[in-house]
Length: 439
Image (cartoon, rainbow, N blue to C red; front, side, top):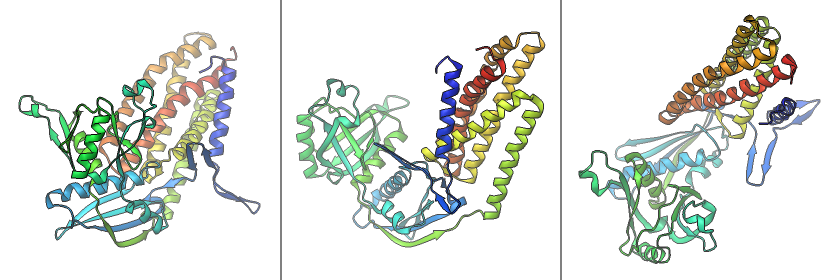
């Protein structure tokens, strides 16, 4: 960050204008319809229309039956878990979509109940979930740089002849040392078809001691890729890497998603409306606006000119957070909006800590310039510690929660991170340029 506050102020203005552009709503002005902007960079495209969850905008529900005719009974649970896993991955591939995918079993038959928010076109939803998972094993390119063997990048690999169609089964298992140690590591055992075994033998012969990557639907899994340690001629391979039980099971499910083709038949497809009425949504918006206005009035009434700067920083903060939500994109549910509102309160709290520290310094007779720097320095540790503890909580909620709980945790975490930037950079720079004056 530049040290010159005028340069920082210019950067803040540019950031604010960019956030305003991203947040342009879809409206009609004098009969002319203004659409949401789009980002079309070389490797990054985004439709910047806000994504709303099932509770706010409704979506599509699909009830699909799984055909287990060609899958052994002992592998039924693994196959349905693989299908569930890959569908969730596809739906969330462009952001946190907060889809709801459930496995149901009745009379020995398996079904997947899938709810996708923000989609009104049933055909579009079907195309997402019915696409066959594509698993492929890739080898290092001949022209890859020498360091690629140590720090491999996905672009350093090329497709081989070995695919998910050559894999019979992937299964997580404890290491052979499990009997002698208290907390064993886990491995993933791979069993290939007869044709797959022949391909694997040739690949391991040609690429001995080199990495071999695994890609599912063109996305790398288990990164960094494992190293080929020996020539494998019997079609039975093993992936090692100090996996925990959960990590090994997750990798096995991902591999089986491409190895065990599971036909899904649509039994029922339904458009579902918002679970929260429009009146409740309108009241929530009014409550949010009243809360922000009340906080702004309090800050200005109590802190005077300092409060004005805090409110200005808070407005910029809100614009930036919402712009980040649209870029990721984050699917907003009522719980996610609650996380956003809570983060606004935490952003105000940081300003209160800073201003109170500055006022303490002024009461001891310190000059405005010294009070400003000392106040910020002493408030920073309290702001840092409180926000880090909150981030730890959001990480736990995101890791162990699901659905709207994860949405709440994500929006709160994003808000907290940007609130730290807002308090330490935006508010600080406003005060230094317009209040202290000595720069």
